[in-house]
Image (cartoon, rainbow, N blue to C red):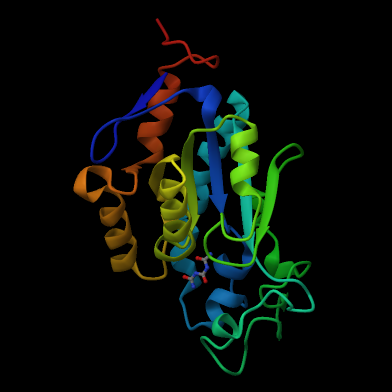
Length: 230
Ligand code: TIU
């Protein structure tokens, strides 16, 4: 078992039952000219998440964890896009319209791809989702249960939107989530802090919050096959 320092108390998991979730690290959210910028956001705020997430991804790959990358986006015919989602943000550039990285938040566009630093490798799951929560209208729960996964280490953007929705959905399905504070990010620092505080409040009402450094330290203290290092 691995135990990580976390809030509101240490997070313990069986390394054979954990998955790393990398939520929506797409060019559309993290790079200039994408969907995030079309909403009026300063996308540079999210880039601090990439380095620490890469370190966690490398550790997870080394240990053979299940790794799941999600992407938010829609079918090219937009048949899975609710008007309630389309009619948000900047009315001159909406989901499905042509931007500098192709059609915003549409599957197959350059902006829909995961940033090169965190690009999926063969054998890793890439899950396309039309909504904010990764369980909504996807087979994520089936994929996790088929592998016996009980615990989720969560990275991704943005903290108070797709990460928050996903972690709440996971909690309702009985999964135990550790959200890494430096591997998640928001266009709004105050929302990032608030969302993290909400996860861990009330005795971990939604999950745990920790840092990549504390996770990696705990992993270093444990051999690759999950035994405590002597
Ligand atoms: N706008 C914003 O903060 N986020 C999203 O629209 N999607 C995700 O968080 N992935």
